[in-house]
Image 1 (cartoon, rainbow, N blue to C red):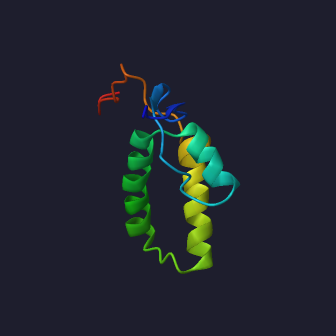
Image 2 (cartoon, helix red, strand yellow):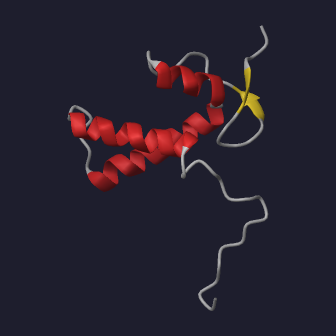
Length: 94
């Protein structure tokens, strides 16, 4: 069986998609249709950083709201763009 491909909003190319929506809601369906497995793995690593940085307890409703906002920004908002392939970070002299 051929793997399902998506045009990944995070990585900007056709890649294997998730095998099922990560959540049983509209956001989960949007992710399923537009996010690759590779980008989802990137999100999981980013989520770990966010949870540690803010010491989030996912049982807390406010923490859940924050994670959802970070998730939406990561894939569909201002945090969605990855640096261009030829990106060179500025040096300290600039």
